[in-house]
Length: 313
Length: 313
Image 1 (cartoon, chains in turn purple, brown):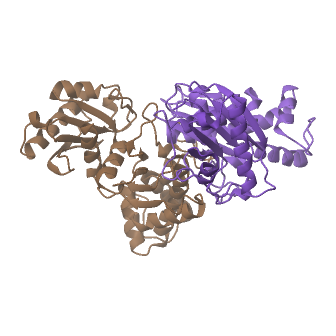
Image 2: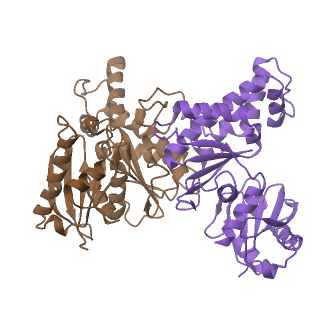
Image 3: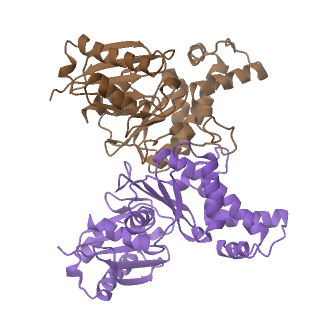
């Protein structure tokens, strides 16, 4: 059996694949747009092409590859490899991705939640290396989480553990699309931060270079760097909410390291400083002194590496 | 090696011990008041007497016992068997309980958090039997938790996992003694329920048979059974808060069964019905349909049985 596996990161925009060796070196890469305009067959053809492309780029043949791991947006059934109802991949609803890829590739395939696999990658080679109790939180359109305990990727009874984004931080908060109220995702995702900033811009007319139209967290980061008081206050608030949510997650999971990944985490200290401060203000004595909140270290490779690691079994 | 172990439940009021066989049968029992008026030596002498008493009652000798497990109020260091700073056992602060009991008994001793061991007992022989992902929540003076994942008792990196009582349900809530704000314990413990009822009695002067002085959750249960509208509303509120907290715990841990134990859980449907209803209203689709919220099945034996099981290794 070769030590080569292929990790796939199936996203709403792009599909990425990497040929990965035992040490976690990415030997070959391939990517293509995820064809959501086609049906599931088109998406699967794209995955197959990326898998073949990554093997070819790495100078090998699919016959030399032991297995393939795929990270997909949830919800999904990781045990059966069935996609349930991802918002970003509507055409994949109900698709038996594992079975269909195994048929198309002639290789064993495992499928898991993309946030789980980013965590698994970061724990293998990135911010969680050597850490047995580790949580990786992805801050983007939503707030996702993946979690390792005793060195193992954790799923819970049906694959929905570490749903960080849908823990309540305010029982009187607004209703979330998930049906719950005051979910962390409503406060600490990039989407939530932009929405809140737009509301403030319209209501309070603060002194700022930012404009509501086309507002992004990247623009807010650049404004914060350029001494924009309003932009800094928005990061301060978001970091506070995030800190409250992380206290909850650490109280439940007792992880030693929390890595923050995804677009919003690139804002660095504007976000990390208030998140860490809030965590220290509210966290439990005897725990908070030991917990580190750090940036993810692998960027977009986390998902590919986690998927390749999962494929190793 | 014999199949006999002894489980000890060290409480703020009483110390209880049971001689337990491989099948979880309690063959002998012993108990004594926990002598908090003495120093740690007095408490330890009490534990030793109970351990010897349980063996004797079970018709055996300590020489026939393989090991002893002790559940103690936290916080404690379960890995080292050191008590840290339990509110209910001030004289035990910093005591190396494992080492001192091993010296006194000449047997291997393991120490863990009492809420963890109640969970471990319930998962062995009670409400969590056969359930691989299980949370046990103890509702008493505080709100404690113990948690099993993949069939294993979980500790996290330093033994403070499943701290259910100190997860925030309202980030703008009142400050808790732990330093956090809006902790579940401030809303769903027996203490919190009595405090809230007293405030309402003073402020709103509701029509009720209940009186603020000497108020207990047991009196509130009896009033609810006797059609007291105010008492029922108090359970309804407490069940709602509990349901919100359980949604958070299930979102983090993805457990399939939650058992509620402790004094307040004896209120039965007055508490369970609103807790379950809130859980179904707010929980995640794809998860909540499968989750059961049930009463603990072992009563006071849960801690002894969990400790005896832990001692089995």
